[in-house]
Length: 141
Image (tube, rainbow, N blue to C red):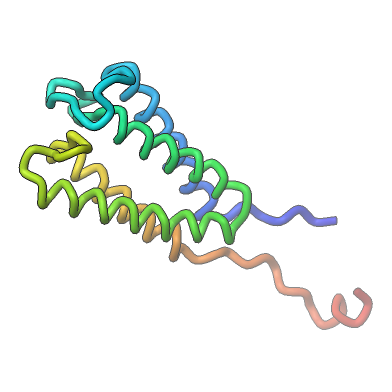
């Protein structure tokens, strides 16, 4: 029995998932668990400001990215979700001057914009089809 091939979308889903999980865990190491929707712009991971609420969002998106790795259809749906979440987070940071309840700065907004673009890529990357069976294989298969 042939094992289904892993698609590029599944690989990208894994990469996005791991990146978001690492960012979420590192964010909790910096911000802790108190002042859930607060924080200061000094609470940063590699220049990306964070707070516990944003860390939870990153952890959830990261876990879903790992789940998207398990199937081509799940990876596509994860891409759609990542696009919607990334675009929403990017837009939210754009309309809130001080980062609002997410304590997000412009580098974080840019990160979310990149994640939204990656979501589009995951959702629409072509699935590489396997070798088509020949006529003889169809008759005797």
